[in-house]
Amino acid sequence: MQTKKFWMLLILTSAPVCVRAQWLHQPLPGTPRSPDGKPNLAAPAQRSSNGKPDLSGIWLAESSPIEELMRLAPGGVSALGEGLPSKYFINILADFKSEDAPLQPAAAEAYRRHLQSFGKDFQTSRCLPAGVPAANLLPIPFKLIQTPREIVLLYEADTTFRQIFTDGRKLPDDPQPAWLGYSVGKWEGDWLVVESAGFNDQAWLDAFGHVHSDALRVTERFHRRDFGHMEMEVRLDDPKTFTKPVSVRFNLALIPDTELLETFCPESEKDLAHLPAK
Image 1 (tube, rainbow, N blue to C red):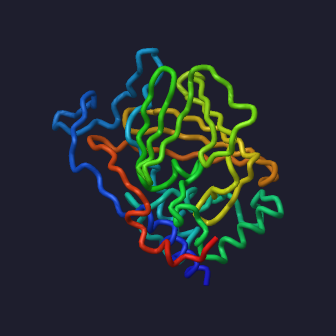
Image 2: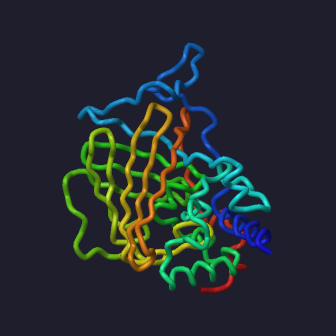
């Protein structure tokens, strides 16, 4: 039964977003290259005009080792979007044994309920956006555009955008709840530190169905290790959901010499009309 649940979950959560395509080949200026003309992903990270690392590029969460994915899903995993996913896309609490998951009772009950529904309530299966940090963990690329006062994330999944303000402003005191919240960033050495709050309580944290409340605060740390690789650290603080803060670390890989294409879930999703009404 658990295997069946996992397969149904992956089919349902990936269906709206896995039909996609990239520009076949679009060499981009400024890309360091090896003598054979291929992008040199191990080249030093480039810097912006203010001396900070330039995080710009098209990025994709790296797949977890197949052994870890098989531990989460003994029945096997299927490719989603660009390939196999990060374990944290499947389960944000993948580093915990199930009996040690730091969940408040109501959050644990919601998680059990979502597993029993085979993932039919995951928001992307209903053409709704992934939240934070799930949007960066989807096996679908996103584009990061860095300017001196603002960083913009363009998610190919349903052509969604997110703004991170680096102009010194504070988070709003009384924000209107939003799927992706409100984000401000600052530099600590070569790390970009992003604080986000003001989320609604509708998004899931992962495909398995861990929820969060409107009290969620997310701290993301971005570090471009070299031209083709970026480290991410994410801390989730939500006392209504977790008994203690939860932190995960994963890597992003650059997808060179290509561009995003627009995708809109209602154009390609064929199963939405057959899902139970909310």
